Amino acid sequence: MKKTVFLLVSLMFSVLIYAQGTYTKVCNDKSLVRKSAKWARKGEWRNGFKAASPDASVNLTEFYTQYSKNREQWNAMFRWLATADLTGMPKGKYPIEGTTLVASVEDSRNSELTKRRSESHYHHIDFQYVVKGTERFGIIEHETSKPNCEYKPDVIHYDYDVDKVRFYDSSKDKFFIFFPSDWHIAKVKTDLEDQEIRVIVVKLDYVE
Image (cartoon, rainbow, N blue to C red):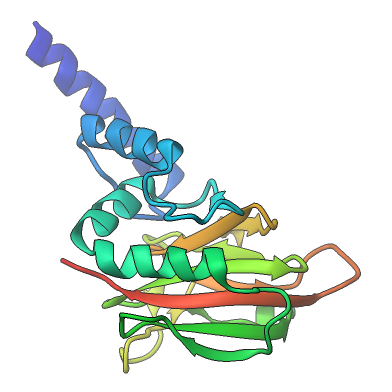
């Protein structure tokens, strides 16, 4: 009986996911999902960085799994974020001590969705933290999207259904993480008058 109920619940969950579309990597291990959410809330990953937390769009299971596989890089990045003057430092690229990571401090401007390209990365994780202004990110649905170019050097772009894009606006207390299964669009124009932004971008290694 318990096995039948479990199968029915799993089937209903699968139907729900299919109906809503796939926007990120799905984890069917519910205990791992709960463990990851608790870990993220507890903040064991922070390493002194308290200014922001994961946005609601972040796949917390991927966050937990990748952090567990590659603590050195994640800890070094969060330590750098905690100690650097993110709003006052000149724009540019900054090596993160003790790693091969580089933090890009970008002063940029949002633009119309039609002028922005969707993308994903196979071997890297896109960490983005907007420290000035508001940036709009889009995450595209998988089943209705398809690549429109060859993959190189670690990026691929997509054609997608605009009506199925999920949009998220940044705030100073949230950061975004785009894993390989998060096909995303960055620097999309918001509803605000000011479109100028400063965003911190770090590409971490994705560990299989």
